Length: 247
Image (cartoon, rainbow, N blue to C red; front, side, top):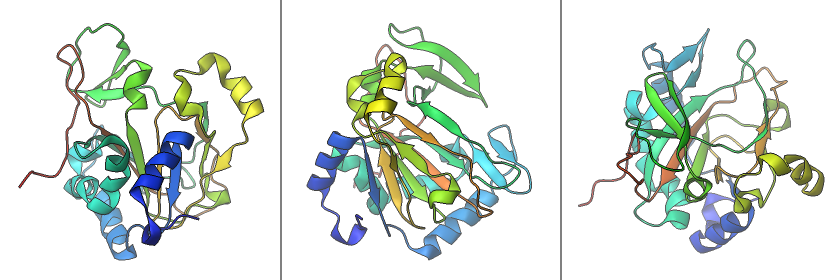
């Protein structure tokens, strides 16, 4: 198992380019995880926040939680993006989700296929526009998502019973796979991304992934941060561009 104590950016980048995902243990201290969990609980209710007894989903985390903006810029986290995308990488979106009794869910095999932008503009290749919780989303060409990295920070231990992420390694290198999903499932063994508290799972949005419902009573809180490093065409602008200020 990979650990932050022996993290090698060059090896990581090679593994990520080959497999489309990476698991690293013990990246953040428990004290910071506790502070992040409290900051998320303190986010005021609004259309971007879904909660019952506890918060279980926040769409626009970079906008409503300053602590997550700081997290996205933290070297220990950001390095999982910059090692692949280069030093110009910036965070474009962050989402929080949890799996607990009463707000439990599963996801079938799929590729992430939308980005968040400032406003709607008709640009060739950008399709399937939607407007959710005040945020414009659009499906870009596959090559845009191929040049992105999602970093999933685990606030809780996530084992086999907690509905962990499952991935099909290498599937990120072949564009949209809607018509080839069954073939990939039959041909490529899935990997279960179990990870300890404070660990990170990074992935390319195009990597085929899924997750089952949690059968445990514990939280499975994840902060999912997406990074890019290039501008969008035709006047489109990323919803957010969070990066460290240049000194």
